[in-house]
Image (cartoon, rainbow, N blue to C red; front, side, top):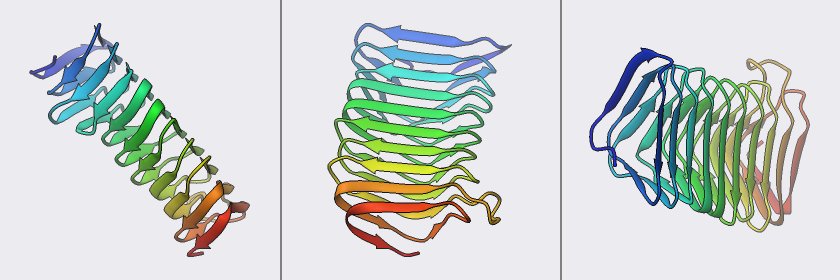
Amino acid sequence: RFNSAVALTTAGQGLAASAGRDLQIGAGISTNGGAVALTAARTLQAFAAAPITTSGGNVNLSAQNISASSLTVAAGGGSVTAASSAGSLQIGTIASAGTINLASTGGSLSTSAMTSAGAISLNSNGGSLSTSSLTASGAVTLTSSNSASTGAVATNGGALQMSAASGSASASSVDTRSGGGPGGGAVTLNATGSTVSTGTVQAGNGNITLAGTRVSTGT
């Protein structure tokens, strides 16, 4: 249980914490380029505001269930990975110049806003997927075994692939243009057993594919 802040100032010095049952985070963790790895055999939980700041170090979170909507991550150039192996995954805002990869197995996946200079991949296997705005400079992939919903998505030329296996797929707006110019990444929203709905879709010269029992768009 982290009740007090941890600040590692030596360049490259990292932190790894592993709990045989539950791991609770109630204070900030910061490093000077060092990686942060938090692992719990059962539940990883944030019970108060808990910013993780690594100035370039990778961040890895792993547990059966991750209940951490008050946990935020600012990784600089580091990548961010989080996985729940037998339950839901909830997390706050994430900012990274690297890639962001989140996956839940056996439960839903929900996040606040995310910003990445690379790709973003969110995968919910066993529940719904919901996220706030996503800003990337690479491909954005959203996959759910149930429904999937997102706020505004901007990829700066990267493709958007959104799939909902047994529920609806919705995005408030989509912009895959590169620098706002004519080039753009392909946009695919697929909910073959339910509805697809979007706000404005701006893909430049990229292909747009919307597939569902009913399609509604603000384009």
